[in-house]
Length: 124
Image 1 (cartoon, one colour):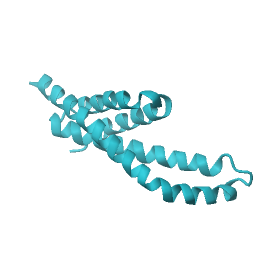
Image 2 (spheres, helix red, strand yellow):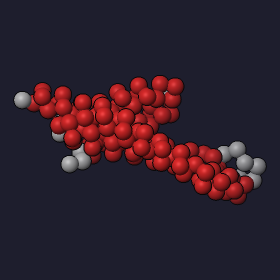
Image 3 (tube, helix red, strand yellow):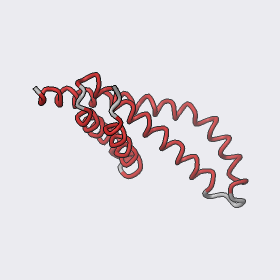
Image 4 (spheres, helix red, strand yellow):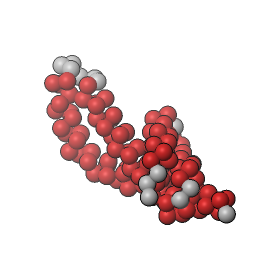
């Protein structure tokens, strides 16, 4: 059911939206979800699933990259100085990451279903 080509393209686009177009994140996620669902060509349910998986992967990778940047960058003592901040941000930011994970999956999943439905209509 998961079309990995569509998921990887959607995942890369979701990370680009998060990184470069954060002010327009909602609209960017709608567009990326639609593109992912359309590429999947699996109908509405398949488009929803593939776009939601791409959004979840994008959230997880973005959170990991942020944690690595917060740990290694900006500390006087290098990696050892950042470990305290990493632990504190990891514990307090877990809820925020889960919230973003749900947000990305829902927003991208809805438009992914629309894209998948349109793609399946074009095949007939």
